[in-house]
Length: 338
Ligand SMILES: C[S@@+](CC[C@H](N)C(=O)[O-])C[C@H]1O[C@@H](n2cnc3c(N)ncnc32)[C@H](O)[C@@H]1O
Image (cartoon, rainbow, N blue to C red; front, side, top):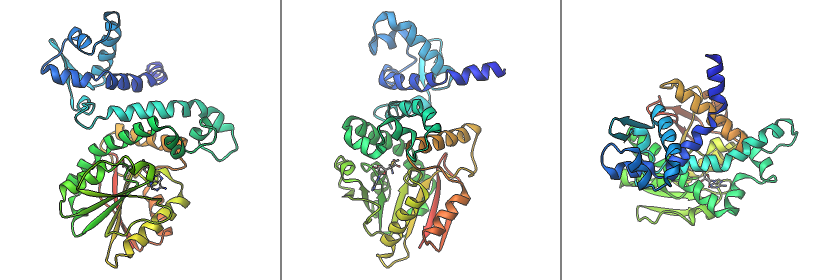
């Protein structure tokens, strides 16, 4: 058993790449268009791939069926809720696995050197001549777009979950700014769900230059370390885990100023991981541990425990806060009161 576990873990990088290839070959779209269980030869010809590659496709599908990504009956392959995430007209999560494998495979190559290095940079920076990820994304428009698409895809899934699971966090506020909100996927879903709420997406100018074209929210470019537009509520979703404590304190101070300048009882809503929050299963725990390694190796951030969140919030000068009981997977909701 130990040998199986060891061998499995040694070759499991193939799992990420198989998922990426399934996304790029648009296997979920082909199965959906087929409209029923799809035999391998039909899938192969509709992608299309040359017949001599059918064996590889078969083995790829065998693994994905074993992992529960696709289902299989005698007549062929079927979608499952997991492979539906790859549908390009759905949340298109293929962009997420493509970005992760594209951007961070090199980082992990360098973490061996990084462990011995006495410098303050991350593994990602060691792999990119000292450049921070935000500069690399700006200088490589293709990778930058893939990053924005990946963030938008995962936002589509998690924000739908957020508005359904925690509607009360949006009650009683007139306007909201989504800080580090990317190209606006999150605010669009919030604004469409709560049409009375005036929403703004705020991100780096190079990012909001590609913001979605929509009448339902406004767009502001800027730097969250300097000034954040005033609002009753500031949303920080998946942002603070990218930064070390000192920077998080600065961001939270700017958020507090933005909320207080409306002269109302505003709040900051943080949606991020809480490492010791309740989890549904061991897969969720493992996913959080993997994300923590990802952010530590690529940016200067980390995922945080309840105690670490407490210390950060108090250091930034907030009078109180509330961590909501878990109602969605992976992410927790924390409300901060000035
Ligand atoms: C991990 S992404 C999260 C995106 C989005 N909130 C989500 O949940 O999908 C972090 C975001 O912070 C933005 N960001 C980084 N530095 C920033 C800065 N100084 N000012 C404003 N936004 C910044 C990035 O461009 C990126 O869109």
